[in-house]
Amino acid sequence: MIKVGIIGGTGYTGIELLRLLHNHSQVTVIAISSRSEAGQRVDKMFPSLAGQCDLVFSLPDDVILNQCEVIFFATPHGVAMKSVGGFIKQGIKVIDLGADFRLNDTVEYQKWYGSEHTQDDLLSSAIYGLCEVNREQIKNATLVANPGCYPTAIQLALKPLIDNKLIDLSNIIADCKSGVSGAGRGVNQATLLCEVSESFKAYGVSGHRHYPEIKQELALLAGESVGLTFVPHLVPMIRGMQATLYVDLLDGNTEVQSVFAEAYKDEHFVTVLDAGIMPETRSVKSSNFCQIAVQKAPDSNKLIIVSVIDNLVKGASGQAIQNMNIMFGLDENTGLEQIGLLP
Image 1 (cartoon, one colour):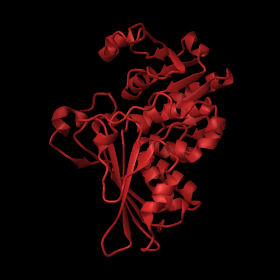
Image 2: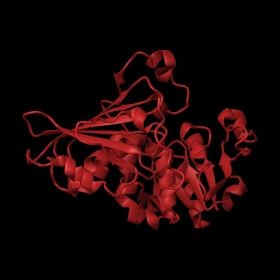
Image 3: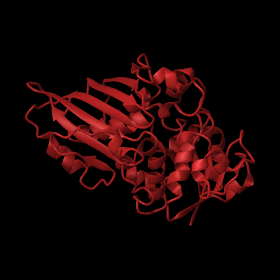
Image 4: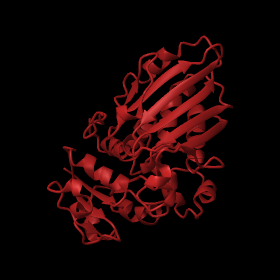
């Protein structure tokens, strides 16, 4: 059994890791940390785990973490970069669900996250963990930067088009919506029930922290720079994310449906829906699946791609476990076969 530790266990991604790993046949979680809750039983904070988990929150520097073979950092930006190096030196693999190792440019990191990046050596060795793109590199990685939720939904929607050079890269529009859990568990007036219910709003229009990550990775896919307009929206639901992409086909006669079907025929966690069927966020709720649909706009070269994921699973903790499976040579699907919850 693979010994697993979780640093940052009181947020939504931390508890989601525990939920998913509970049904993983090849791992045992031996440590979960929280500075604020050290000494408290995990199932006292999260009653859904009553009778299923007897772990106690430890401090992030507790020696028990040194017994782990892999550690997940489910922490705010700036935390992982201070601690990851020590674990890696001990031969422990690390998967960071935060942003510390996603951006290749430290200047960009400081611009968007407001703090200096101090770990150039670690950054250069980190592998960006979008499994459907970097699977081979992930296999030998010791440090994986788990992608953001919006970047995951957007990249999966665009990858077949970019790989086959089918679209104008200068004008990609990403119109995206997310449930409130994407903002985390911290108290924030903007995400209170009375603030988000029966409402719908755009945010981060002047610049969102996932923007440079999306641009960076799309440019790496394309081998050239891309023009991107990215606008996220908050919708009054807990889980779920939809990315609607608008792009211009270079050839309006391209049979795009077959391109997507071929591109993802061997990808277990990406489902291309039949022509005319649009995905819904509820269809992937609590699952690690991404559903994608494509539709040409009438009388134009405009193509619309719709991509849905659960922002806490494929957009965070599920993808982190998928990365772990790859790193340890396990079946990629292990522990992640849950299908979407209905209703």
